[in-house]
Length: 178
Image 1 (cartoon, rainbow, N blue to C red):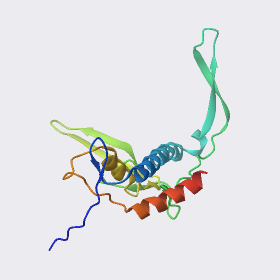
Image 2 (cartoon, one colour; image 1 turned 45 degrees about the horizontal axis):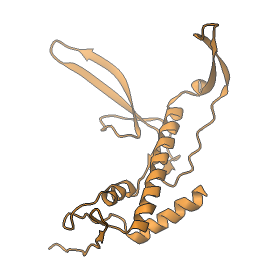
Image 3 (cartoon, rainbow, N blue to C red; image 1 turned 90 degrees about the vertical axis):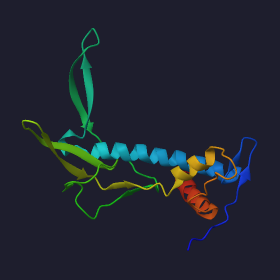
């Protein structure tokens, strides 16, 4: 037995949308903050993958013609700040632990262990180092993509989050970023 929920449809001069203009503007701002959280997470992952002795800031030395001829270490590179509710750092486990035969996700780091070349087949094995920084979109990216493109009235896809959930998340993120 399936149950159908009545989806509210809003009309603009270009077509139909699953939410009103005010909710769309909140979704757009939430999506911007989510994309910023992804960039912060990528920066943190790059920092976490490096060994401690390699987390340094370098200044390049150039000759008279502007060519790089060396570098000097200025100081240690600080840990990037993660201040988004979309990002979560799990500190219960070690920061680098191995998992084999996982599918690749944006949060995993691929390291090629070894490559054996046979007569007809090439065998590759990978080791995944998980950095324990997770980015959760809460469905904001999907809701934003559904809301921004006008469609016909029958093709309107309902939002995954309710308007109340979107407003609560907006207030949470807005108070954190203000």
